[in-house]
Image 1: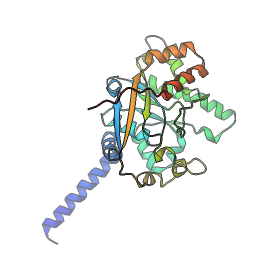
Image 2 (image 1 turned 90 degrees about the horizontal axis):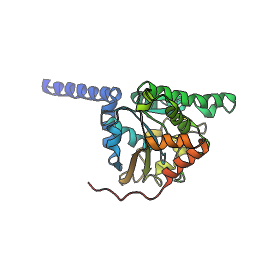
Image 3 (image 1 turned 180 degrees about the vertical axis):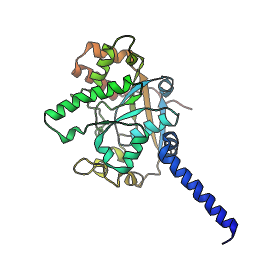
Image 4 (image 1 turned 90 degrees about the vertical axis):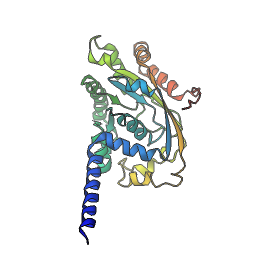
Length: 274
C-alpha cells in the first residue's frame, strides 16, 4: 500500500471521527444533520416561528399528533442555534440512544407517573409544576406537552392534567418584576401527521411496560413509504396575554377546555407560499 493511500485513509478516518464526535457532542450540529434527513420525509411549513426565535425566553406548549413531531420542533429550534429544554419522562432515559439525544437537548427529567398510582404519584404530579417553573425562573426556554401523550384520534384531549394550567397560573401570580414575566408563552398546533405511521405505532416504539424499545429509532426510519414526502404545518402563536387571562378567568377544567379548543380548531389560515 502506497503512502498516498495510507494518508488518504488516515484523513478519512480522522474526518469520520471528527464528524461522529461533533454529531454526539454539539446539539446544533446534531439538529442540522437530523433535520437534513427529516426533510426527505417531511416538508415542514413553520408559521409564526420567527416570533419564537425573536423572543429571548419562551415556553412552547404543542399538541402531540405523532411521535415524530418533537423531532421536527426541536431540530427547527436548534438548527437556529437556539436552545429549548424539553420536559421528558424519565422512562425515555432508559434507552441509550434517546438518553444521548435528550442530554444534548438539555432535557428536564420528570418522574414516570405510570410507576406509582398512589399518593406518591399525586405528589410527583405536583412536583412537575415546580420543575417547570424552576426551569423558567432559571432563564431556560422550555417545551412541554399539556396532554402528555400522543393523540391517536387526531383530537387533543388534555383532560384533568394540571401542568399547563398551574404553570401559567404561577406566571400570572408572579410579581411584575419577576423573571417569569419575561417569558413569552406560545401554543403550537401541528397538522399533517394525524394519519402518519409514527402517530399510530406506539407498540413499535414502546414495550408492554411502557419502556422505549432498543430498536425504536431504526424502525422509525425503515418503514415503507418513507420516501413519500409529507407536508406538515406547524402554527406557532404568541398567546401570552390570552393564556394569562385564561388562568385568571377559569379553573383547571375551563383552562384545559380552552386549550383543547385552540388545538382542535380546523379553520386554519390559507397555506402560505414561499
